[in-house]
Amino acid sequence: MCGIVGFIGHGNVQDVLMNGLEKLEYRGYDSAGIYLAEGGQTGHLFKEVGRIANLKETVDFDLPAVVGIGHTRWATHGMATKANAHPHQSMNQRYSLVHNGVIENYQALKTEYLKNIQLNSETDTEIVVALIEWFANNESLSTKDAFKRTLEVIEGSYALGLIDKESPEVLYAAKNKSPLLIGLGQDFNVIVSDAMATIDVTNEYLEIKDKELITLTKDAVTIEKFTGEVVQRESYIAELDASDLEKGTYPFYMLKEIDEQPTVLRRLIQSYQDEQGQAVFEADLLKAVSAADRIYIIACGTSYNAGWIGRSLLEKIAHIPTEVHLASEFAYELPLLSQQPLFIFLTQSGETADSRQALVKVNELGLPSLTITNVKGSTLSREASYTLLLHAGPEIAVASTKAYTAQITVMALLADAIRASKGIEASFNMERELSLVASVMESILAEKAAIQTWVEDSLMETRNAFYIGRTLDYYVSMEAALKLKEISYIQTESFAAGELKHGTIALIEEGTPVIALITEEIVGAHTRGNVEEVRARGANAIVISMQEVARVDDQFVIPTVTTALAPLVMVVVTQLLAYYTALGRGLDVDKPRNLAKSVTVE
Ligand code: AGP
Image (cartoon, rainbow, N blue to C red; front, side):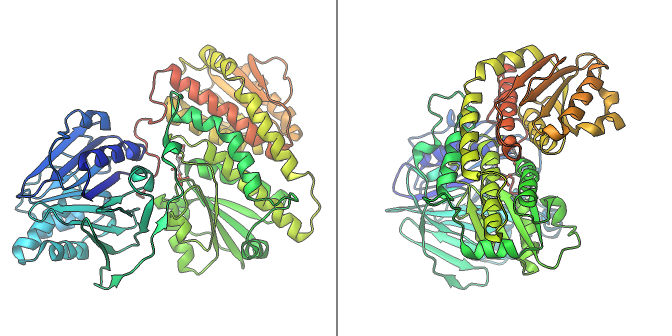
């Protein structure tokens, strides 16, 4: 949720920390701070509420720092105030700490060890740094041993960065559940939540596993298990290019990422098909999925919504019974499982704590799992039996767009490969239809101006709105509603169109926007009937469909594609709807309030 970065060695510490925090800002933007140590027991703390830009104005870039840690916050404990901003310091300010995660037993530790100590913040994190000082003083321990003692008593999720201003030649870090990587450099080393943040200084990284303590100097990195055992680990090269992270001429990353979808789709066709147009998937993976008597798709947010389209593709094309579950529920209430289940984890970031907790449960049962993610080497990829990558390029905007269509495309290609391996006849040529979908996406993206005008006429002033649809269109309406909600703050609900008249239609008033999605002809007539019902109660009925619909207040007709893949084109219209609504309201489209891109706390 939060983003942390640390740097030790030769180089401008402030530059690396501030550039890193700017790239990590999508992880939380309630407050930010850095701590710099320059030797001679001299340290400098800078903290500000809000964006990194606020902090940047206060940082002294001329200080001769040799080590530093930085943090951008998504508040879990305590309001977005300067006192609650990280880094937090021990009472004697010898120790400074940044933290991403949640310390679940912080109240109990406060009572047991720190009841006579006046704390400066409401955070769980301050308890950790106060404990390090407590153990150092009360058990006469070195900084490293005091840190180890503290790691023995804290419970929960954490990625930690620690500096002792009396020994600025060392940077300490530790990890449990929350993501943390070590970046390796010439005469310097870094700790970071996400390789993207320091890709411009190094592309060589070390993965850190749970319950590991790391000691960094400018020339060396030591990884130790909490048990004390020293671990040797191969580094890997992060497949990221700093230019991928640039917004270019786009006003917001979200619009850039919406526009990238046709290219991502074509890239996926190439990545998962050979020259003959045959799907290419790992034989073991195909065997494991084909052998499953039931597939369980587990995910959160937008990925969960993509899961429902995936379910339809796996059932209709590969003929495998499939269920979709919210990870946060599934992790603590497993359904009765079939004899040969296989679990598919959909996750753009690969770090979502709810999904990871569900995977921990699946691994405990020793059952097979496949993670479909956009981040190579992410936790959910490392800990699953199999991984399929989305090849979508970094997704920076908090509101997920290209990852949604990429997840659906990968599941469509996988379902088609399983169909072929089972000798089931195809009802359409997947590659040809996906190529057509990419072109139709481009034709819709060429209509941005029309969609922007539409939004200005119908959505700008409203406080609430409804999306309705049936079967696949209903599943797309779930994603459409989430997009509009999360970036425009309009209270938006998605409804199975047939369900509206069983209660919720009571909420329809004069002018209430109701956006109906109609691609599935088999149910189209019924949805058109539901549009009539809401219009009869004064709704402002808007239709997005593949055919003209009579007697509606406004409509957008999308070119026809095969029904099974229609969600891929329909969703683009609804993404643009949300984008232009938020833009028109003057909101920060990329960093909506109260949200973060990668949710690493449960
Ligand atoms: C979607 O726009 C949101 N950012 C959020 O719902 C997101 O989809 C969810 O947190 C899941 O993230 P993941 O795909 O990285 O696991």
